[in-house]
Amino acid sequence: MVSAVFHSPLDAANEARAEADKPKVATAASSTATPKPARPARDPIDWRGLFLKVLPPLTGVAALVGIWALLTMKSTTFPTPAATLKEALVLFSDPFYSNGPNDQGLGWNILFSLQRVAVGFGLAAVIGIPLGFMIGRFEFLSRMVSPLISLLRPVSPLAWLPIGLLVFKAANPAAIWTIFICSIWPMIINTAVGVQRVPADYLNVARVLNLSEWKVITKILFPAVLPYMLTGVRLSVGTAWLVIVAAEMLTGGVGIGFWVWDEWNNLNVTHILIAIFVIGIVGLLLEWALVSIAKRFTYDEV
Image 1 (cartoon, rainbow, N blue to C red):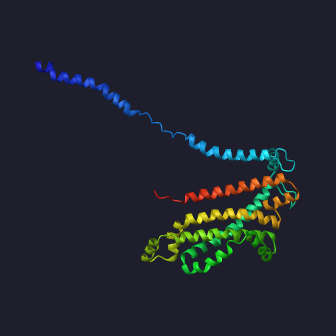
Image 2: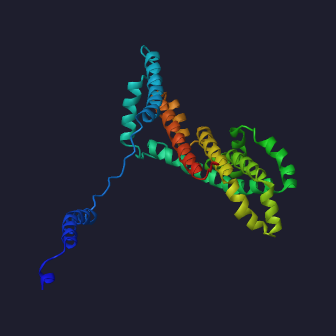
Image 3: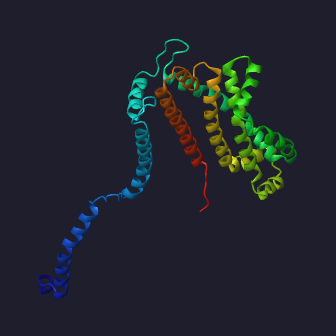
């Protein structure tokens, strides 16, 4: 009976230790039950890199405008930057007006020129890229075609225009023909060089595996040649945009080249300067677009 009433000292010590541990357990349970979400670390803004990217181009443009303003300060024939900007705002306020076949807005002229470039450049890509693959793949064909390419590639673009007028009897297809024949060479040459630089081990493995020619082209050559091919495409589109202005000056119709020549006949130098800037900006945008595409298919070794 006595043992049922009185507890031993060990039991009392254990109960005290349990009571002391209860707040700790409760605190740990509550801390694990509601954890605070960690905030994601934000990358710091590289102000120095941004500064180096933005400042040099702005400085170059400001220097150009400043030199232009100084040289035309007392001129009565050459327009100043302020007069050119004022006239540009008027032109771009309604770029798509149409008052007849020979009086179109600047926007229509740009679109018509881009349409000719797209058709001529597209035909050059459809023919030039496969031809470059064949020239790079087969040595006999390369030896046969290389002298012809070396002979025809340095010919001035405008020298091909009379051939187009003679064959097609119309100005628009003649301009497209000129773009085609001048933009095809970079694609042929760069694609052929890319095929020739494919490591021979890749082709030896293809022979061991007895792959068909189509498999060799699609699985081995095309991925390896793609950066070279896109470089040729980028060079070709620059050549095409360069050629179309000169071709349209001679063929007439609607287009940015014809617009420049028509404004010269009207002695409107301000519009000619605006056209020069527009041609440069459009060419720059085309270049940037193709460079961004080429970067996606360029793989640097780590």
